[in-house]
Image: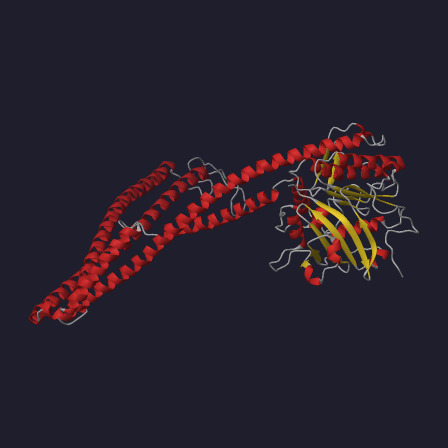
Length: 631
């Protein structure tokens, strides 16, 4: 059974009296009349009765207080009534036709809020979706799609710009429009969205579990034999048994330790104390020698640095002397008076005889002597470093020996002044160490259990992720396949309708592609979206009619196969063009294979269609308006 919704009777009430009451039928319904006779008002009442959120009532309509509608769905006949006081007024539903509903008391009606509330009851949208066999769907923001939102794609009013696919609304988003379009096409996008949302949540949860697992794994010690719960249980049992043995020895201390051992205990303690004192003295001496060697090492290193710097200075001085020797002064550097010529081999300033060879030899002597000292000092430094390293090794060994003896002395003698006290102290110390180890192992055991649990949880999450990814891929492929199939049908019907339009728009005469974009709220003919105003009206109504007509031929659409057009001659439409489009509407209705209903209003009634089987009510005029409001 396919999704379906139809209006079978509409009654508008004012003060308990019917201001409008007409029967509707399946197929094509035409409300005709002059401009200003109330046709658009009736369209607004239909939109409101079926779950639309509306309160911009015209003057006459604002005097009415309730709208009642007999509705046929895929599963039953129901009667709906709503107060016009609020755009979100609750819907009251009677399960049956209007004739029976009129004689039913208040207890025969069930109240449904127009939107989903915080309570657990159904909203009117949820109820009517189920009754019409339309699945509940969500959009990207997570909210459920409502009747109001799908009616925006089934009600073409005069207030919405002709270039827009959806009925205008101040608060609108691309996600909502796309979700509504997908739903009407029969695309299971909401299930795909739920799957992808669940997949994101599972991946986030897996990431948390993986981090916890990694942290727990890193915190575990890599001790031999403690890598699993079984080995820990075995070690914990060993500790408990050993603690039990210690408790037994403590209880039987008097039979284990002979009181006659006191003299031996005291003598042994004195010997160990002297031994400990010698070890301490040896450690102190080794530390002194190591400190002295370290000091000498520092002095040698500093002296070597000094020698290397001195060598550099000698080399620089020799180079400078050679450079200065080549300069020839003609004037005194102090008073700038001309200098006398002292002859070759003499100083140009003071006249002293200069022995250049002796001077060069002196620099060479100093350099050689300095380099020799650097070499000897380097050798001494290497020897001293080796000596210092050996002293450090001896110091470490002396420290180890001292601490071992100190620990043994403390364990044996500091806890008590007798063999009995020492024995008890040793046993209690050992028991304390075992208890601490046991507590640690218990914590480690809990950590391993937690690690195993995290591993299982992580593995389970991974399995669920793999399954959801496969499901998401299947749904995505199925969604694309369904979208392509539905849009191919809409394209074919849309192009056929445009070709049958009167020759007023060149692009409509032989279009190659007719497409609608729900998210962008756009209608395109061969990629173009803007035409003459009357042609924009034709394009929009063609889009809605093509979507509706495709649904009447394919039961996989979730379109309820209901369409309400209140603008077939909007924006300066010519009379012949309007008559032609009315015939196209009837043509598509008669070509339908599934139950459907289309309602349209016109002030340019095609005489060929002015038949009782197609029209609803009389032809209204300004003196005989649709709403009969008594003073």
